[in-house]
Image (cartoon, rainbow, N blue to C red; front, side, top):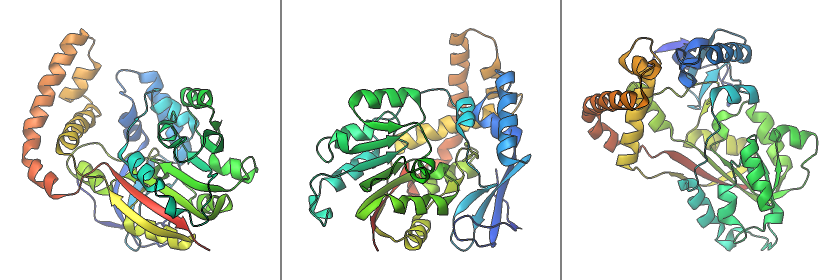
Length: 348
């Protein structure tokens, strides 16, 4: 896939600029194919197509790069709802040892960060999965009874409640606006959440309502360089309405300045060649399954014995590996670690 070079009139949801470049467009069926193999589950696929069309209120979604703040965003800039995620994703496991978890824990263990020397700290994690990060910081940093979480997964909610975490199956904006959550938090964490979120001004304004003085905010999002590399080299697209915003250091500086958060630290996850190359090859294969009657598509939709399908898939994956070898030098020159990590402190 090649990035397009057309000018596109739209309003950036971050800086309100109308100066944007159209990268590419997708239609509802292309978006649905990213999540469900049409030929394998036609009924569920059609339901997802209709759901995406309702979210966008359109057949088409554009992906645009703002030339002023460099935010890359989906237009319409509307996130998927709970029904979308139930259709698009099967209930799966949660990563237990993300790089950003360790970065955040190590930072929090530096008690000098808390200028008021407060000992009884409170923490909010938005979209906490099954509580893997919470397990790493409780009780060394924060006591369990002082931790609040939000999560939509019933499996994750049950696991966290069994640990004694106060958890809500509700949108964080709704919790704040309805004053279900009214306390102020010393630590707020959003790991792999912000790229899914719309209404950014509304969200950060709400966040300010529950941030204590000198509150610490930790955010992790996908590495935009890795996404761009994947998209330009025939791997998976960063598909809306799942991911609708693509962040970078400049956009974090912008949002921090706008809502009075000081950017204390910004890091990218170190590059791991074997992990990155393995994921890239898998993403190339998955991308090929989305095209009707491609070899990968035929392998995945065929009603053959699973062992034969696995054998054929491995042959195809081997071909993709051979076709990807020439990209290795380019991959090594770029910082293609999986995540970006940001540490903010509340000011004002």
